[in-house]
Image (cartoon, rainbow, N blue to C red; front, top):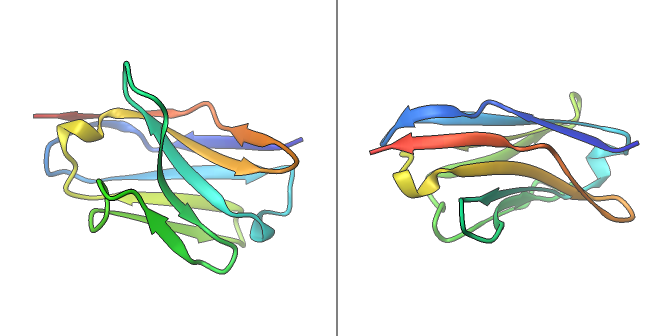
Length: 114
């Protein structure tokens, strides 16, 4: 059974950094593209970053140059390093993948104070 568990969220001042982690299980992690999404109150969930099995990455324009997605196939984990955080980055961040259907973690709250 596929499970995704996010951690690492918190409250940080603008300009600060956080590193989110997502621990995956129940599928062959190294073969799957992994995604980070976020959802702010009143907004739709939006794609933040993705990383392919070959380590190709893509980012939303709003986070390019500030966020870095990476993966550790030995530990079945995906990470999102977030730097120079802005108040508009405040959201619940979710890990995501596809394994026959879409799977989501429970999310981790990131709050950036101005």
